[in-house]
Length: 130
Image 1 (cartoon, helix red, strand yellow):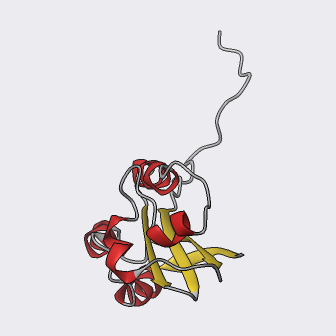
Image 2 (tube, helix red, strand yellow):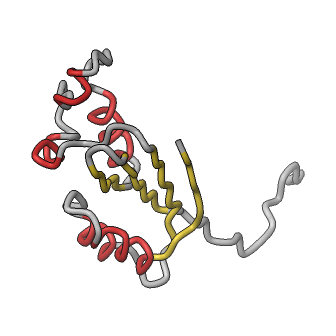
C-alpha cells in the first residue's frame, strides 16, 4: 500500500478525476471552491485484487462486498467505504477512485483546507481594566 498526501489545487484534482468514472459530484465540489482554493489531497494505492468493473458503481454502498473478495474468503462487513465516505463528505470533502481488476485500486480523497484570517490586532490577554 502506498499513501501520498499533499496540498493540491483544483486543476490537479480535476485532471485525476477525469480518469475516474466514479468521481460523481467532484466537478460540483471543485466549482464551489474559491479560485486558488487549496485542498489536502490524499491518494492511497494498493496492488491487490482490484474491483471488478461491473461492481465499481456499488463500492460506497453499505454492506457491499465485491464477489472477488468473497471468493477469496476475505472477511468483512462491507461497511468500511460506506462509513469513510460519510465522514469525508461530512467534512466537506470528496472521495473517488480508479481501479482495474487484478491490478489494484487507488482511492483519492480531497479535503478543503480552511485558512483562518489573520488577526488585525493582537488579543489583549490578561489586560487589567479599571
